[in-house]
Image 1 (tube, rainbow, N blue to C red):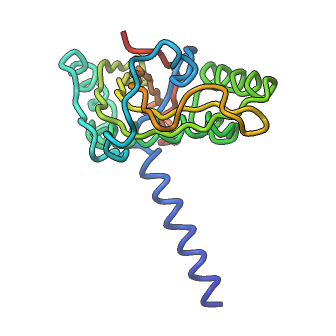
Image 2: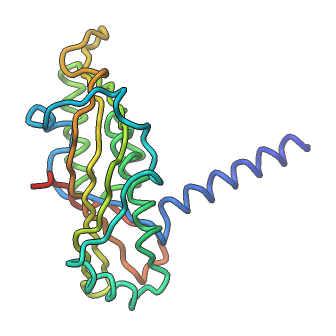
Length: 216
């Protein structure tokens, strides 16, 4: 009986942690653009992984561009519990979870974290990857910067756009485990712009990724 109670408490703790990452005070979503790792052929020169600190949301530079201030004020007016620091913390966690779900082909996680258009783009890319017999062996090494670039309240819908500057170690293997592209010893600088959305009056506290793009 004691063991059952302890397991129940552990499950409750995990659920609360997930809520804190994906709930009212965080943000997460994207549009129909290629996921970051699908466009790495045209990415910047790779950096040795050993030269980069381990990934940690708290270690990233988190900022808010002045262009987003009016939109943030409007969102706070509609949802006084909205907090930019906690939103950015949650957005970084979502960035990691969504990328890892895509790399692993975890369709259930993508269904929870993304809007319809973004989800369809991810699922199609996963299907194409499976058809080609390829497996992604990627790793998010670090998020160096996360910045809110734009924010807007349209009716009861809040949209917040975040730029992520990150380093990703990427490798593609075939069905036999042979490397066909990329390297896990080098990290590729990646610059993504993701937009998260939420109905501020909805009972559901989660933000959803509704749009993705590469930073200019």
